[in-house]
Length: 135
Image (cartoon, rainbow, N blue to C red; front, top):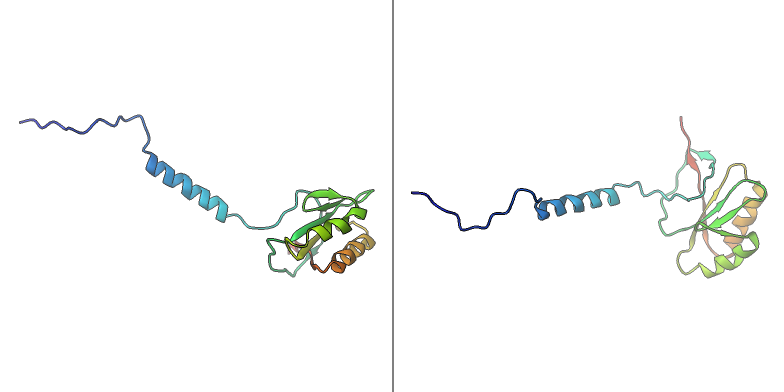
C-alpha cells in the first residue's frame, strides 16, 4: 500500500527565510557590538604618545587641530575658523559638557593652550587625546 502526502512541495531551490534571517541578525549584532568603540576623527593627525589612559566619553565633543600653515580646526568633524570656535562652543553645550582635544604633535603649543583656555572658559570638561605608547 502506497501512502501519498497531502503537503505541498516546497521546492529545493529556495533558502528558508527564518534561518537566513537569524544569521543576518546575528552578524549585524556581532559587528555592531564587536567594534572597539574608540572615538576616531575623520581627520588624519599624529597624536603624541603616553602610557596613561582616560575612560571613554561617547557623547563628548571632539576638537581636532591639524598641523600645517594655517593650522586647521575641526569641531565634531566640521571645519571651523578659530574666531568662530567661541560661538560654536556656546551653541553646543546642551548636547554634552565634555570636550576631547585631538592635537597633532607638531601643532604649536600656543595654539593648543589657546583652544584649551577657550574650552575651559565655556565650562566644559577637557581631555587631551593621546595615542598608546608602543613598547
